[in-house]
Length: 465
Image 1 (cartoon, helix red, strand yellow):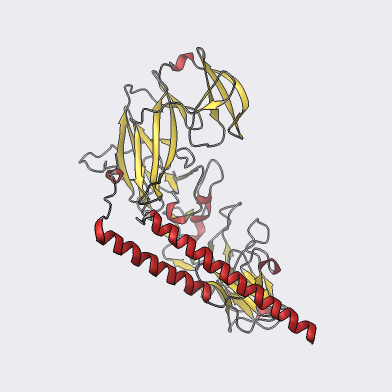
Image 2: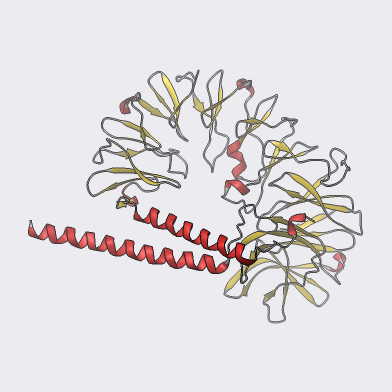
């Protein structure tokens, strides 16, 4: 088990009170400062899904994450036109735009780029005259006449580009790539990892970095179901027939906290589904392990009483020669007098008690109602008990079914359990958080009243003109 599953020591006494008051005051001042700044009244629907917008006065603005809307200096709203990220795909945002006289990248004017000279490729790559660019970055050494974006993904933006001598990822040159042998990395089903992996005959690349030790001829992508959109917690896995890889790093063969090193090729993947388990689960013989992606550590999970291979029955549902198993996941939400928030993540593997795998039989696909929701999946029976294996992840790979045909959560022994603490967890007393929320509501209300008064004043002035 991860040693991060220990209770957080509370800060008590006068020191805790003083710290909480200071945090509240500082946060309130920060909120007031952000709300008091004059921000533009823009309509994002003017340039949908582009991060560009314009106001009633003819000013053009660009939305920078974390900084809000920033004015695009000198832009002409009447002729302004954002460029799509992919002419044939589903993504519309590229950050590129042009008007009658200028070209813009990520809200910045590109003075060396004439708008009528641009030949747009996709994913922020474009050619202008005898130069090639990615966003605002000039591609050093690129041959603009031979530059093309590599089509390694269909559903996702393609961010590798190359000419006859250079390979780039998001505009950064990858030295030593063999351009003639560039190829997509195989995968069984579509996965967001497609857009960040590429290979040649010598190496595998992940986000422009070399995946050290990977065998390109055997390397395949693993589809992680329920992949988070938060890049901090993304877990892109690959496998080359002997070793597993997380991003550009190999999953360690040494078990964390021990001197034990697993034999190459002995580790088998059991679960890679963030809707059923925040951690990837592996096994070798009787032993099960979990992977902690934030630190890239392989840790012991528990042991089975059988060394037979584990067979996948359905999503998050398995069997060996003695037992049925299912995976589940849960969020560790701290709720209490002193602190609240997402403290961490659990992943568990449970044995279904009292059921032998040979007694399990498939009834067929069913749709069952549960607390206003519908679960669709395969219905199984073992003796006088029925179980539902949802076809889409829903926190557990197996549910019991009552006599009335309603899913119910199975009892959990929690003996085979992994835990990782959220690195963004901040210990803030609940009452201090409530004060901040109240202050934010008051300040937003004041801001709204000021906005209404300005609109009313502008309307009165318009009537008198």
